[in-house]
Image 1 (spheres, rainbow, N blue to C red):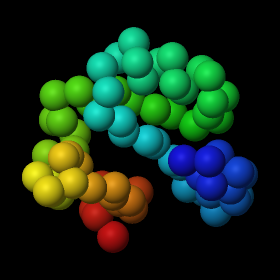
Image 2 (image 1 turned 30 degrees about the horizontal axis):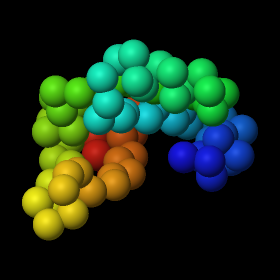
Image 3 (image 1 turned 45 degrees about the horizontal axis):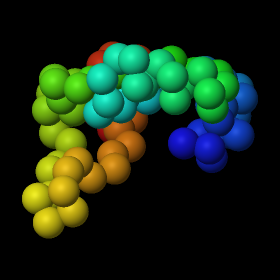
Length: 79
């Protein structure tokens, strides 16, 4: 997450946007977001609706969701 914050302007320079989705509840997520001063949009997804929509994998041996980076183009297609 820190790397995305650091490189955020590079995304903007390429006419791209970063949207982070976190598995926490809204309050926990907002507290983290403000504490870390994230410059891009963040969405709490404690019910994993967005994660499931885009096929983020779950590994029971690692007790949860695996990190995922998904690029969606301007037409809404996953690339």
